[in-house]
Image (cartoon, rainbow, N blue to C red; front, side, top):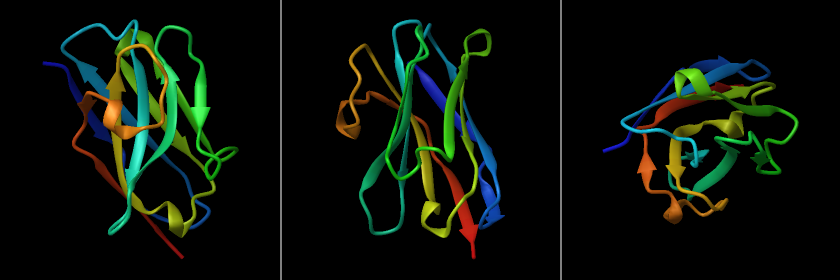
Length: 123
């Protein structure tokens, strides 16, 4: 089994920054897409950002574009989500997810999920 473990969540004030990490283990992610989703209480699980493991192509939801940056460290099998200029509406549980080739923003197509890490942004 492949495992993803998120870390780096916490409580920050609006305008602040956090960097989330997602450590992968269990197999190579050479052909994988790694993505970040988030889910606020009572709301849908929404796509945030994604990166192709091999090529490093990135994708962002409109609401985070320009504020968030997704990256990966191939040698460490780790994907990051740098979150800047955080807003209260960014408050959610953030999940790392992975799938085989084929970029999609639809959560149902991702086959591996982390446990989630809480991000709370206070005003």
